[in-house]
Length: 577
Image 1: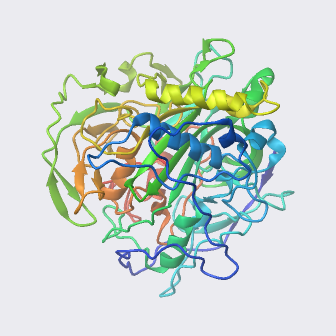
Image 2 (image 1 turned 180 degrees about the horizontal axis):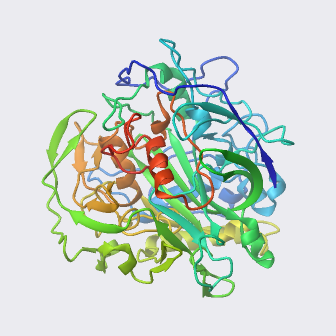
């Protein structure tokens, strides 16, 4: 492990004059001759497309450009799963040595050896490269994002919102692509694996899961062309009018755990990488490099047929139940709130436009709450977190075991089996081929109010672990005075596949990211909480006291920059994510 310093370079993060964002975007093009054009996409997925070994061995596989959407607004869920797998195949292939975000080898090559180099998605721009901390200084416009093909440079914000810092690590001339600067699940939970499987939880000594978020070159081009005008308004932090990201935008969110926390005879089952983590305190973080194992990957993609994005999430197969020992992993979370409640408001107001719309009637009881993932009625937790099933209080912290009420639907399981069979056809395939230990958990594309539809409650077991905040989530989940109140029927997605847009109270990943669209004007991307020069502050490993947790929330722009007590009308961002 190598640790290093963070160099402070400024005094104030907020410009005096807030401007409105653009209402439209030009197509993503290179801003100079030194920047290559964004990579192309692969063929659109057609009905009945199946996975084959040829997909796994293709020299430079491309993410599909799109998937069909019928005139009666349907798509086969198995075909969506195929789209997701083809996207994953491209994203985890080796990256080009000369161009970031471009495949430079096959899926089979990266599965055989971690020496194949960084993966395609790992060379997308980290959120602190896309929207670095920047101090405008008077009337000067903020500087553009980091150049696309430049080596990683991370300029971060301090938790007080008063300075920017350029990250450097002694003895590390070039920084790793993987920068794990998120230690919580969107500010709601901290996630841990027991130091010894089966042992009682102890957050002070157990292994914490960390996260990072990235964007592809299409989104970078949009930011690069519009950066100076991406200035927020407040209460809540928003663009008004809202932005519209280009089709072709892809974002990823990854979850990692220390490789050292996995038994040595099982480490071959994980993709690993050298990553940056943060020790010390949020006020004085110490960057360090360590080896971590990938345990989850979200992929979200805006396509011509799906302006509300397609959401897919993959998980390492041992995250909840160890497939080698057939024993529970013991993964648990520590919530940042002390109670859960529910509400079904009559209307929703979209702050970017000021429009108020009616919420749907979803026949929900706030006193006997249930959800119906994939049509199966499931009780939801209510009241104090200390009363949640399996909850234990350890040194004043509530620890809650992670459960998985949303199982993989048969359509997705069938395509997972196809993917494994295709991998087994790769020459030289053996038990060391790492991607056989990852599976698609689910996929979303068409918004709906019907919670019984397949993957309505799409969630990854280690990215969205709590109920109902982000697992079995729909509507809107603000935290106020220690209580997470799920506004269960709130409209959170506008699907512009329909002329003029159609409103939905959606669940899962799409519903959560939809909050960024309807409440913040960010078009399903929470990365724009770094706009206006504010950038992002790294979260250090460990549970922080309530005062620091509040500072983290303020740094995320959920509160006004001058306030430590006035919550903005926006929830924590996931990512996708």
